[in-house]
Image 1: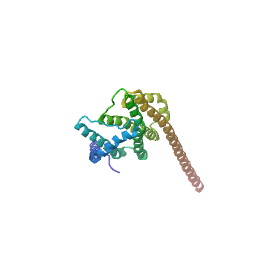
Image 2: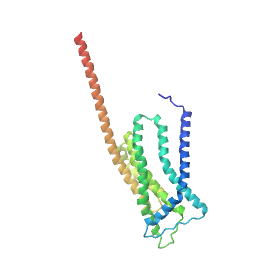
Image 3: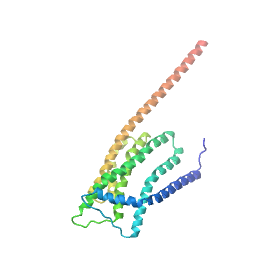
Image 4: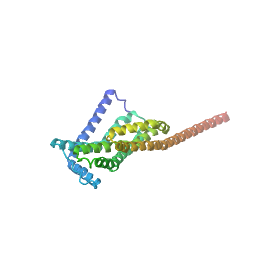
Length: 273
């Protein structure tokens, strides 16, 4: 058995893992920068393909410095997504010695779901939510205004709309994980429904553009996913209760068998006397 680490040793290990994660991120930024023009071309051309009724959408830049800023933003976003598995791995390796076997087992079981649901949320935000919000806001002022926007504004709007859905889709996974550990129950979630709705509306107003339709497009999926999380929590909770009952039954049968063996041994001793 390994000895317990001191606080300084824990800090040294944390520092080393953060450095490894940062180095991985920087290397991935450098690699992504080699393909950043292709990525930008895809996003720009995809905007025209998404909205054929609008026509060709041309983006402008306000100077050469903004071009470099946009390229670094795209490379950083791509590198951040690719660094996420490395970050989760080092987080697990750092925290694993401090938690019991059950927590480690559940963490490893839910880890693929974390990455998978994040990707699904990003795809949902990009292909479902973003086109509806962008088309509505773009066509809102076409008759009255000459609608123009910079590439930075477009990518910023895209990020603000799409990225939160990656985290929203993590909610059922997080709820299932905490329910499996007994930290929360579906009854707790159901009792806090009204407060959860309010939090969803507040978050939606912060991450979406200041229009009612945009707020609804962001708030409704969050509320639906909260309700889905309650359903997931009920399912996991029933499995947890059934497992606990099986363990209690097995423990009771073991105790009864041990008691029977002791009684039989006592009877044999009395007969020998």
